Length: 542
Image (cartoon, rainbow, N blue to C red):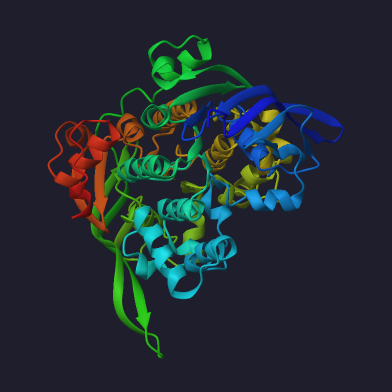
């Protein structure tokens, strides 16, 4: 029992492309004991996910290789295991939660079938027994009314709900080792707390070990027994969590601990022109039943919301997953139909057709939550960013267009020389910066930012917040900032809406809501986000 369940020794990972070889992981070593949680921490591109994927040999072989090292699970070197042996380990003894659930879930199958497939394959559960276990798992990970969600497809769930389904799938077989690659990235703060408590409980009950990969040091402090700090493919510091936080030895560790979004949002200015205005906006999705598929009820995703957003201002929209935040943003940008009045730069657009909206699209941009799902894998980054310019600024020459693309990449902290690469060649955080560059290259007046920092590590979050603030000041941009990360919202938003189940719980100046929230739901969100002691999670579920 004293032997580690997982022992990695001198592991290196190389990638080969076009005759060139790059080292992504450089001779790292660490152990995970039985029942222990080890956090692998570092910025995007540091090699965390590559290291984790190596454990189950999930890298794109043969373009990826292991020049050296070994990965021993229960004494057996997995790097030397054949496909049959790996199939016995994957999904049963070792399971994995991936960072981007939309690309990990099958879009053609409902979630009951996807979870049930795992239970049937590894435990032989079918029919009523499988359904009972599926409902139990969905309840554990915080899916409301799971009976109604069994037939739902991934695209019918919010980003946080999709991630919770992934967690349910990973925990279905009670694995010995769980590899969690940014498992709370898409979750709001209250559900983050619940998931962390759930993982701790399962670890204690079943003696499960965990490799927890994250850029969120607040989560590391809550869940990890030991920490390995990684940068540029190397582990630069390792030790007990409390010791690392209290007395970091390496300069990079100190840099991570000091990184946090800072600065103040723009001051409110009632003299600025109104860019976006909404009155009594509603988005109701019909629920159909029976042989004739008659409408028997509605899901009131957005239910009577009013707002005004002025130039140079940021409206933060916060709330739990499924509260209607993203649906509100999609309605305002006319990407889904809605009822009520929506006005953009003084024009009523709620009745505009797709063709009528097209001339406005260059002034109305969106940065989506999942960069891997929103970037075409068949296009280079240069083509992705230039696509909008080709449609809306056709008079630009090829050289002018390329210069705009290069400048946009430099603005978001990426090397312009990387514009000929494809999305899969970037880390999750780098892909999100590409998505931001694609939106900003057209110099819009209004930008809907849907969780734009959720995939970014802490130091890059701070850089993106500064970037967004600078761009806003320079171009007088209006932002609708949708996020579950209240620390980022506090640094950017001067007005704020708190949503729950499609309705506004609280609305007003962000400073007032952060400092003196009036509603119990808002108080619970603030307590969970800022690690306050009095977290009233019962208010969330009532």
